[in-house]
Image (cartoon, rainbow, N blue to C red; front, side, top):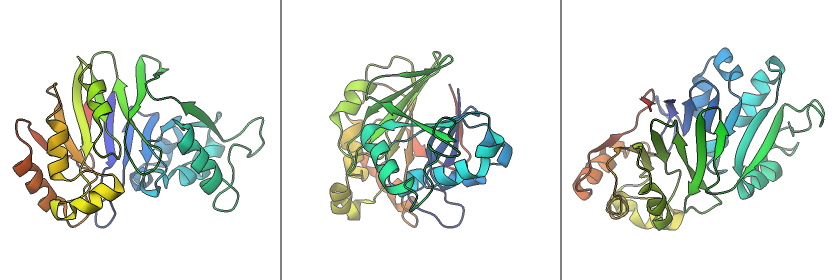
Length: 254
């Protein structure tokens, strides 16, 4: 599997793009502003969008993706998420007030988009690839994802805070190659991280102390203007793990 970072910032500005990852050429994990940098042909090839949660920085380009390429495709785009996330998309995005309900356009029998409900811990198999929603702890219904090619695997935490269930799952993965984990706030904003259910460097350090595997670790979802400060604080707080900042354009193969 080839995992390309289209966006991994906690905001926008300059070259920053919000969370979106392209897997091979047909799967998106989240659909933040980074999706808009793809060519029309690349957008047309996307068949599957796996959503971690319904916050705008993770779903904002789903409506534009469908509107841009639906007429160029011969099958619906499938949006995968747990039921709480799909309920938000139905009620607040694809509701005819904010955007058309593309599950009924051009008609309900042959729509441009369809939903598939996920259950935490239950894998979806796409050819030789499996994608499994895993536990996340956020202020809205949310998951992370475990991607497994058979030869290796990657875990993306999604937006999360202190989350013992994540480590219970991750520590069982013998073929784990990569761990992408958020650290949205610097240490001075720890109280904000706690109330919004994100991580800061000291909370990250306590979480990684539970990790029994030795994957390459990448930090994602850094807030604009605090990127360098937060990464310095991560280096000060986290012991025993080599890690670096995830960046747009990074490609991980496993």
